[in-house]
Amino acid sequence: MKIILFAYSLLFLSTPTDLVNGDGYKIGDVATDFSLLNVDGEMVSLADFEDAKGFILIFTCNTCPYSVAYEDRIIALDKAYKSKGYPVIAINPNDPAAIDGDDLADMKVRATEKGFNFPYLQDVGQQVYPQYGATKTPHVFVLQKEGNNNIVRYIGSIDDSSRKPNKVKKRYVEQAVDALLAGKSPSTTTTKAIGCSIKTL
Amino acid sequence: MKPNRLLPILLFAIYSFAQTTEVASFDYQQLQPLLHQNSESVQVVNFWATWCAPCIKELPYFEELNKLEGVEVLLVSLDFPKHKQKRLIPFVEKQKLQSKVVHLDDENENYWINEISTTWSGALPATLIYSQNRRGFYEQSFTKSELFKEVKSYF
Image 1: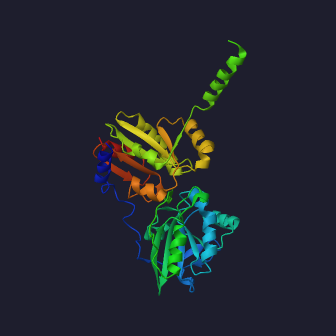
Image 2: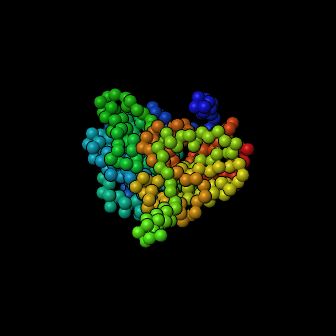
């Protein structure tokens, strides 16, 4: 019976509707730059960070419990890697008209409460996240600078234990950035984790 | 019957009454057979959480589906384990959910998300629909008519 079920599951592996992963960046693609409003009122672009070697770009928000569960780990990532050339850039992809608690004023409050030392940008008009192919919060893209281009090197989750920070075994983003800093390719380039759908009207 | 023999029975009755709603917590290995049932009914598996607004919005549609003959609905909660007693079970009680509810408590998301569907990025809500000869995965919210139309296409 088990064999039948296994064969059955194999048979249907390729058939489900592929709405999710069809668009957006794949590893090795050139990521677009943007100019988005930060919680401090300034516009921020990747090009502003002349000394950066790359970026830990994280689509996240105020309202998703999975995002909130990762806030301290996002702060720690920025603290550890900004000085090494990989600052965190957080972008809130949610349309504030579609969900309470994710407008710029709310983002300012949260950034202040938690002491975010990194840009927390609003994806005004929801123009940026679809280009990256972000589908949820949190959703991480590690970019590496090559000349004027930012190359996508890692897509996925921060680590392997969203709901229990004390059970983390694999720190995917750290491993990816450490590899890039050492001049190597990350051994794990894509991972998945549960998150909240991006809220649009 | 003497009072000292009645007391345990009474306590048990109170205890049973207070514990009417039980939600099993499963790891993926325990959940997996429920995603591959060899049943004549169309199986609808909705991945949700009490904090997920679009999930809560569409939950009544799944409850209505569950009443249909030939359809079985399973609601797989991805609430935080620490919120199972405080939020999930009170929610199930308050909403009087009739569909089967289980709580998926398994950290290895990077493994089981792909096992459930390679097309699932991990966003909630998400729904698996399958019959004996067809299987589909939907990382989206449904309107009532969309959901019923989709499920009926499996008959």
